[in-house]
Amino acid sequence: MHENRETSETPAVKPGSRSAGEGDSRTARAYVCEESHSGIVPMNYSNNDKTSSAESGEGRPLINENAGQPSTHPTQSGERVSQGLAGVRKAARENKEMRFTALLHHLTVDLLRESFYSLKRKAAPGVDGVTWHEYEAGLEERLIDLHGRVHRGAYRALPSRRVYIQKEDGWQRPLGVAALEDKIVQQAVVTILNQIYEEDFLGFSYGFRPGRSQHDALDALSYALLKKKVNYMVDADIRGFFDNLDKSWMIKFIEQRVADPRILRLIRKWLKAGVMEEGQWSEPQTGTAQGSVISPLLANVYLHYSFDLWVNVWRQKWAQGEVVVIRYADDSIAGFQYQTDADRFLENLRERLAKFGLELHPDKTRRIEFGRFAEENRKRRGEGKPETFDFLGFSVLQKCTDMEVT
Image (cartoon, rainbow, N blue to C red; front, side, top):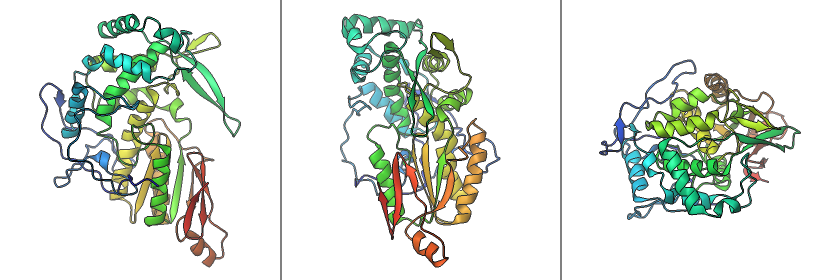
């Protein structure tokens, strides 16, 4: 097990002062419902807690970082970001209310080059038919041209090529394969926006984030089941998340932190680019193409506002006992001390997701008795062994008072 999991605390931040030239500061409006039927309320900040909300989650305590931090930070591909992007991250960390008005100038030829080399060499081509190795020929001239088109607004996003992968239950999952230049620009924008959102995302969010993996999420789950007061689990499966997220809400969520119209225009282009399937173009009214470079970040932003912030308020305001949450992209698991909390949470979660065009899968979402004392409690009541559940492709089994992942 890794020793980098995070403690289950109330995420709280103290807004810092505005950094000159970085963006507008305003009262942050996070889409957090304090009740399942309530509207939009502002984020709450503690006057006493100076830790970032990104530093609070489920599992083991964080290892203390070195006092001297480098002036650059690794991107998701392992590259070091520029001094300018390090400044964006610093501003995002110090002022949680800031909306960044000038971001596109960070999209340089150097960043496009780094983005290109971070892509998979042997990935299937999109509708443009251009492979990574073909684009590498004459790369510098291509990148200079691409950079110019992006900055003068002449860049056009191409539709994604629709492909399907077979799932174990027989259902075919649709994926979108983006054109190569779209992948490059999307990766560059992801690198820029990660400087903001890695300071905002909560500790129990693990999917598709720099320095985090499925193993970390499973480690946090194991720790929660062994060390926390967990007796019931809610295994929540969002039906067709990538196909059903609301595009208008997506833009509203992005606008909470991003006010650069050129970045927003790029994101709108990708959301409206549509898909090409068997020579036919279509533009789905909802969703974003799963499989594109930008889609994991967009998914995390969408669920950060529609789920993460809400569940943090919910467990403080409504839960009678301990509540732990672990989310990996659109796959989440929640543990509860009391059955009444688990049942109420599941009911409120259905209402919450419906506000944003989402619903729980009726056959894959369930509440089960599970934890250190589940087998003993069920045996005392004359009931069978605790049920199992799957998380990130692993079956989680109850054995005596321990938890096994197979």
